[in-house]
Structures are given as C-alpha cells and as structure tokens.
Amino acid sequence: MANGIIRDNRVNCYSVVETMRVDQYLELVNQAYQNRGGIEKQRQPLRTTTAIRIRDRMVEDLRRGAVLPPVVIGVVVDQTAFAKITPASTSQEVDAIIAAAGSDSISIIDGMQRTTALREAQLHDGVTVSERQMRVEFWITEDANSLLYRMLVLNTGQVPWNLQRQIELIFRSILKEIKQRVPQIEVFTVDDVRRRALGGQFQASEVAELFMVFGARKETIDTKEKLADEFTKLDFIEATSDREFNTMFYGVLGLLSEIDAAFSRYQGEPTTEVHEDDDAGKIRFRKGRDLFASQPARVAFMAAMSQFIYGRPGINKNEKEHATAHAALLANGKQFIVRLNVKTPTEIGQFLDFGTLNQLISRRVGKVGEFERSFFFKAFATLLEERFEVESMVPSWRAY
Image (cartoon, rainbow, N blue to C red; front, side, top):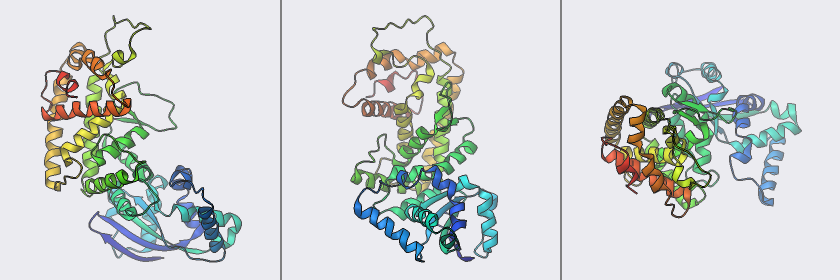
C-alpha cells in the first residue's frame, strides 16, 4: 500500500513510497537487474574478505527477518500517464501506471547491493523470504533527465558508483526517448549484427558516451581518476539541472546526424588507388561518412556544441542563456545543412578537403585517441565561432 506521494517540483517528478512483497519487487526489477549483468557491472567487484563477509551477513540477516532501508527505483512514464498522478492518487492507481510503463522503463538507481542480497536470500529460503514485506521508493518522471539528475544528487558524496556507470544505468530510458525524439538516426544495440553503412547510424554505447561528454562539456572524461570524476560529476549535475537538458542533447544529436548524412553523400574519388605501402594515417578519411564514423570526431562535435550552450566547465550560465545559445546553434546549423544539401557530391568532397585533414591528423602527438579528440574539438569549436559560415572545412582542420 502507498505510504505517501510527494511531488518534487525541482525536477518535476513524484516520490512514491510503497510497501510490497519481496517476490513482487524482484519480479518488477528483474529485467533492470539482468540487463546490467548483476552487481558486478554496477559497482567495483567485491573482492576483499571484509566486503564478502558483509554481503554474507546481509543475506543471513534477511533470512532471519531483517528489514533493509528502502531501495530506490526510477520509472519513466509517458506524458499522459504522468499527468494522471497526484498526491491524492491511490496505490492501485500508481501501481497500474508503473506496470503500464514496461520493464524497459524501470531502473534501480539505489539498491543494487540490497537487491542482490534479496535474490540470494530468496534462493536459500524461497517462500519465507518471498512473502516478507519491504519498502520501495519510486521516483516517477516523464523525463529521463529528471531521473538522471535525481540519481546524481542522490549518489554524490558516496563512493560506490562512478559517473559512467550511473549514466549507463538509466541509458535504456534515454535510448527509448532518442528513438522517439530523434527519428532520423538509427541506433544499434549490442545485439544487432549490423554495422554502420550510412550516415546517421550509431552504436548505442557510442551514443551513451556522446550523452556523457555533452553533460560534462569536454571531449575527454577520465572516469578512473576519482578526483577528476567528482569534478566531472559536479559539471554534469550543473548541466542536467536545466530541465531542457535532454531536449538540447536531442537537438544537437539530430544536428550531428543531419550533417553526417549530408557529408555521406560524398562517396570518395573512384579513381583513387590504394597501395599497400601508403601511410595509413594519410588516407584515414576517404568517403564523407568516414568523418563521423570516427568516435573521437563525434565526441568532439558534441563537446564543442555543449560548451557553446553551457559554457566551459566551471562557468555556469542560467537556463535562459542556455536556451538562447541552443536556439542560435540549431538555427545556424540548419542553414549549414541547407547549404550542404544543394551541393553536388563532388562539391561536398571539395568542401570537406580530406586531403588536408588526412595530412594534418597524421601528425600524431602523444596518445592517438586524446590527440584526435583535441584536434576535432578545436575544429568544431572553430566552426561554431564562424557560425557555420565557411567556404570549406580547411579553417577547422588547421585550427589545432
């Protein structure tokens, strides 16, 4: 039965606390749990003797009737369903809305360790543990960004999760929104056997990284460095505090896709011969679709666009400034696409000038991945400085 419904006006979602049977809870979150591959994919593996003993103690306590703190579950529902929820809603009404949302809209945002312990305890004492009551707090929202913001704030100051794992945790809900809000792109999941053949096709894991860099406002994120990770998380919290964050991300992602499709009309020079002794670095980019087949180029594009909208990390603009910058970016970008689409494929090739790009990017300095991200970040930042009004991409390629 529902113990209370409170609306969070800051991020436009509802906090709903319920008491439910353990087996009902485990059934509800089963797909969310399985899709993450268990606790090992969510937190660092429990390798120490102390950690393993604590897990075993938790399981034993559950078998003996212990009550755990509430787990926190995120649920993304559609706008119509969200509008039906009020502080006066009954538990039956809320339960029906959660059930209708579907398992792919449910995420465990705090409580993976407890869920694992409950599953293990159920294996030992099935009926006894299954019928026991437990508390669950649901965060119900119509916008995955609200859920992400709530999760980041909830876990700030805690050790267990780094930023990447938190983003990946709810990315299924974000991916579902992307398919609805950015229909011009095609996203392949890990189960798809297809590979990118056209502009506008991306792997889900790569889009997840684009989401991360858009929120962090930089082209490189070192999730292994704890201190850097904490500062990145603060930047991400600041960006996602804007209620229109997801809308802006989808707009820029759509822009990337359309530019990718326009560039992809250039199929390369059919008379160009490739010799085995060619310098691979100098022939990296041949066809138009090769540019954004490169994840460093995609990441750099999103980071440059994000900095234009939100400012450099550490500089915090207000939501009105975000909206103004986003609108200007999309307007200039759309005009850029219009100009590209009236060009012939040969003219697209001349505009891209891959000869210059291949020559410059072959001058690798330090780590190749970091160099390419920095190279393309400056390239697209230059494109933004020129409001997309360039005769060719040469100024961008020479910006590094």
